[in-house]
Image (cartoon, rainbow, N blue to C red; front, side):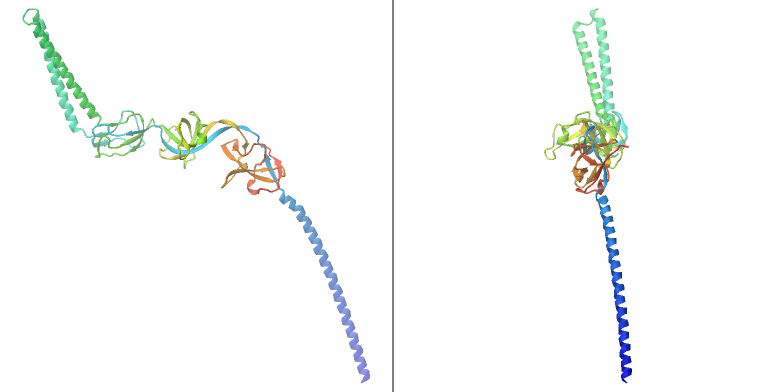
Length: 389
């Protein structure tokens, strides 16, 4: 029994020693693996940090194209809005005694000449009056002719003693009276003919018919309102509302371009009158711009105008350099520290040569020409001079 017990104890001791060796081996392998993993992580971290440090300056300092435009000779312009109208708006109404309209001979949009009949008024009574007066003229003409014949016969007999000088004077007076009565009758006829003629509603001058407010069968009378409106010679104008400060720079003869609202075509015009007064409420005056007739120019419509008021010096920038937002127009400039700054500007005339900037910059700054929408104030950039293509 003691021998068996001894063998069992030795076997247990051997097994425990083997397990201990296997545990130490596992710990050693685990430690080596941990060291390898930590070393790899540190290496990867260092390489990632170097890459980030290398890429960061590139992302933070983009290259932008800049320009220093200096000063260029540009046209000074004034922007304005206003309504379109006939340059000379002629209201046409009844000039005679009126009556029932029998015919209307024109439509809005028709061109008419001076004196052309636009509408006629019923005249049956006036026509009979003209005939009556014409007959009276014939009666008085016959009386004057008879009186003249009697005077001529009396003059032939006076030398033979049959007619006295007093009779000659009497017959002369009778002849003169008959001729006067004939002239009175002729004047009355002419007056009635003129009254009858005034029943025709005529164009006071050549031009374009704008509106018509009369129809056949309508009863019209003098002072009863406007039946037609005409634009004399078809000439149109824009009544531009101009700010008080800009009004002083305008003169009659300044050229302008007028664009009706909703249209794309601009029409060349010229300022023909500048208002001598300013509205005390709006602080604006009116510049009247004459423009030739075109079917796109409709009186009563609205339009915008660009008026050239002279020339001056201003920086001229590419259109891509000027940005716009709710606060207005602005540009980005690069300051001495290489940082982006926003600069609010006032934009003048836009032409094929670029945008004239009338306020906000002097032209000596480094102005970003493009990609302004991707920049933010204070951002670091690397400026590169603009090269005209």
